[in-house]
Length: 240
Image (cartoon, rainbow, N blue to C red; front, side):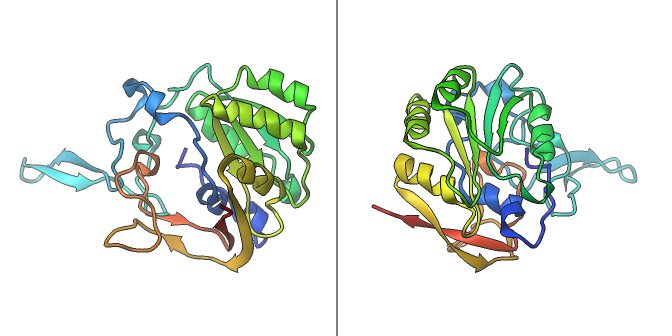
């Protein structure tokens, strides 16, 4: 879904691209995905294709067209082919609804790959309802606000879902917009988010022993050479 670019505002909560980088926790069990769902460019950051030179008739290797972010243009260069996950459902705890964030762009990106979406808006359901709906879901997305809205019973359901091998995708941003993000991540992974730092940088590939950057050649970063981190960011703290 890398070709869907979300609009940034000057408030950290809607720095969606930074959110996507901050906390990706097993979005889908890639090891279990069948090979036929992958595009032929899987695992490639810079993508090249062969094309005939009309002037000389020679076959040349040429880098594909880039979008305005400098990444390969077109869903055919995503990791998964369009419609690959038809019949799969993503459940979303959409707990932040400020600044007109209606989830329409992520929903469209998920639909392109075949996912349907079941969403709770602003407040979570009961733990019982959450557990029941998760029986039909392959992923749970948690979009955190600045106030914790999940309780211990919710957490037990989420951990059970996670431990079963399903995906949990945690959206958090700069302080204070990581209340439930931290509540869940501390229990699942022993880490949390901290701080409100100035970002506003484009993150490139982590080549030549850089301290930060996108993992080159990884399935998750297929077709990506650059990602804007957002105006403000938080850091990940290991609580072990």
